[in-house]
Length: 221
Image (cartoon, rainbow, N blue to C red):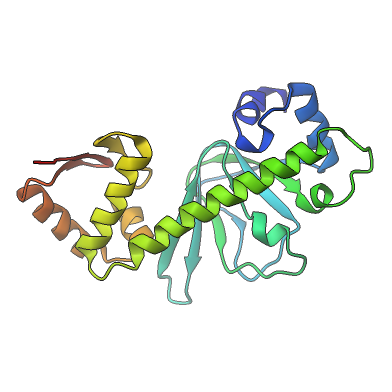
């Protein structure tokens, strides 16, 4: 675990904690490190879980799939990001999401039940960790609210402009990279890729943006 301390120190979940406190906490919440290859499932819809995941390296996708293989991307998790917290915190809750490795990754599984009950070792940093978890969950709620805002737009064009405007504001620049490739962006916005590509071409011709792969530059006049 020592080789991942730089990731853990920069993770909002461990804000304000020293390295020795972080290592103590990992023991408290029965942390287990696992590795998964690209395409492998970490959590699967229909199961339940008592642990939440923290990405140590690589990336994962939080997705919803129907029986016919249609995929809706809810979020993408990189090093330092969490997934599965609400389900781990609700005993018996059935997952309606799956988490799949987008690339080879290392994951830390944390038993959230140990965090939400009285700490058997009465560690001083337990309350601070709970506050950090609340902050992490609140931030995730804001991100999902943003997604709802984007996909509630009526047209593919409006969904694209809503998402790109929000990313520009979030990153504080008119020139930015997004975490998705084109198919993933279409899945995230719940649109057809072909229709999205047509709209991106129109937006470029209209002088509203310039794009290459996952890089965008928004143009204002």
